Length: 75
Image (tube, rainbow, N blue to C red; front, side):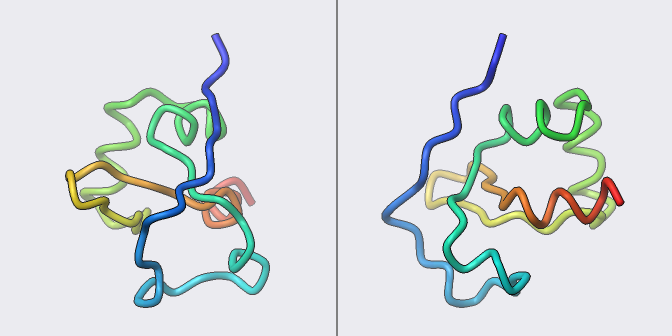
């Protein structure tokens, strides 16, 4: 099963530190981040709690990630 990656249009992103190429990159959801990293949802949540990742939170409390930020973990 492949996770759908959709750009989010109504998010305020001015306070989030980004990599240089992240400015034009769309945000992806938690499921897509798990697929991209090859980890489970509980592992991703542990990494967020341990501050290995610093995702954006939506107004409804969901996490959003930039692929370029996730790629930094894979290096």
